[in-house]
Image 1 (cartoon, one colour):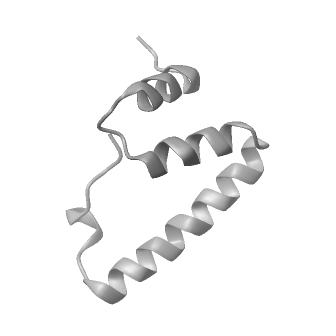
Image 2: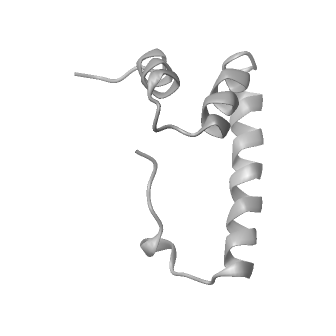
Length: 67
């Protein structure tokens, strides 16, 4: 069975184990143009990765993937 964006959004927003930050980000991004949303998320990912590497340099293969 193929997961849709709507399915993933609904599961994430209803799951009590999903962080408030992720739920808010998904809700905000759902209202935006998908291309703009992806550009913003890619920029945020780059910044967060740089921040993490500065704090704790680790091989990217050791990082957790999105559930």
